[in-house]
Length: 401
Image (cartoon, rainbow, N blue to C red; front, side, top):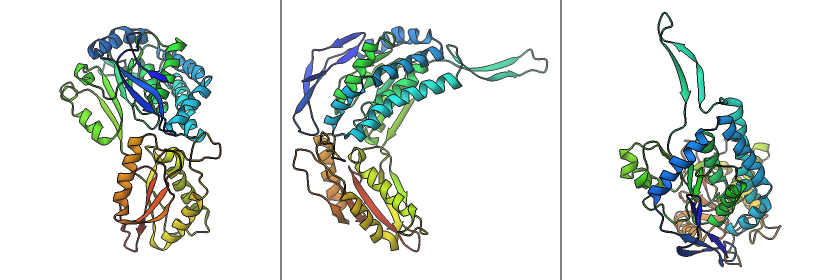
């Protein structure tokens, strides 16, 4: 059984309340989340007073090189991450996006920082600005690290990418991080975080890890020099953003949540055109990659009224080729949803969708204990769950029906 403890103030905390985490494939316990009663004030202070000064002592390029070397270290261990990722319901293709996509982000951001930012502890932005006629008064813009900590609250769908894409820019900017992953898939985030600590590439206090269901009173202890980056539901994000201390101290809060993406087929497209095939392929791909759980997945397909049946038939034909099941099987193209909770949410939203739409394609639930179903709705509904796609019609008036 994998144990998922917190890592704060240079210590792993292996004692505390234990919560079982389940494999998305078997629904059997695979890991234990260990929630320790931690002093969040001390944790934030440790980041600001230990990690922050160590990072600010480096130049931007030195920090960026640490991120590059970290990416090399992690990519060499990717196969162990792939093994764990399968239990989140991810196929090899799904895991590639999360694991190698996340590590690739480290490489990219490191490169851009070294190409575009100053090789100094701060960034010099633009030239000297002459502010007086005789040049006795001039100005110069520089970008300096904040003397705070970056709080990263992450979602369940990309345990690796979600963590690394936030961590890299913060470290390069000279800010230490406190990472709180979603409990779902936290065993994968923990494995990658453990490797980061084992690498020894980041100074003490630069990164800390909170194994917790909720952030507790963490936000009570933040100051104006801190920042928060949140990925998850809009409901939770807005609740955290409205925290009295966040408002009172005007703490920067970046909220990434509930994106609603659509794909629109132009009225001049015909079924024999390349664009028609591309449209269908992309919609089906977005329905099935990560079982539709990507935050950027297409949730609406809007097509001309006279092409609705053609699109449905083409999508149905492609969906028939998608093998759903246990991702350990190389032939499987779509795995189960990430958790029981996600399965329940899928069923609830699917029931709402079926009240106002006709189901044009739907497979039965899988034989193993996962909750994966590929379904396309057609009509006026507004479902937004799992791999559901809502095919709308555009009539002569241009209105979506």
